[in-house]
Length: 258
Image 1 (cartoon, rainbow, N blue to C red):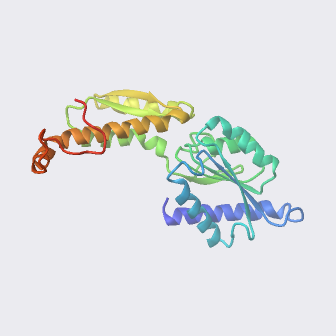
Image 2: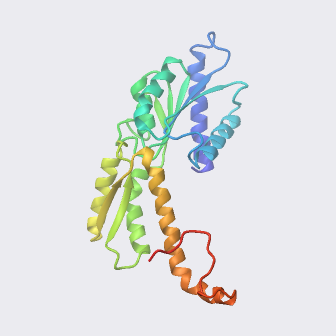
Image 3: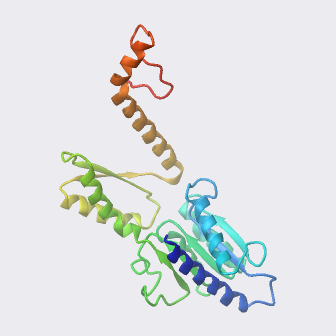
């Protein structure tokens, strides 16, 4: 997100806080934000910077967590089916505004389904109009507003760009998806069409939240092994220079098995 967009998002959040807080200023000592995220507080490399930007933006509008605003965090840890209950819990706690983040439009949809009165400010990767979250980008209507990167809709373009980077003879590519995400079906359909136009085959790999990290770890391990295999002939002269009789080099990583 650019700094300008982030400021616009936080200004919208600040306005939502003020509107919600004014309605019940006599009941609580400070306004409360409900922060609903598809991620985990300690598992995503984006979580730390995102929270830092979130708090910085609040500071730019005069709000400091723990001083004049409270934040109730709810993390789905990558399990989208937890979001409805988490959103309902924030509504039950009568937060003044909900900030929904992540999973395309998953978090924002869960928040919208949970309340039609509490203001919701979202940031996501799907088209909010196509998802039915807002009436239009110019006039959202209802109780939702926010920022979208339309990343889901841009995925077919990513395949086109990737196809220009790989060798021309490449005819098969893979798309790793979360089968539990409501945006997966639409994204998969669009990417398959882009692959068809390019004359390529697309393998769809489904990974649930509790297995995706393990699959990525294995892919990383395989990539390292492949890199070492490619470099191994170049290592032999160095190994001979060290006096090793078999001409091999000491390597503490993964060994080439081919």
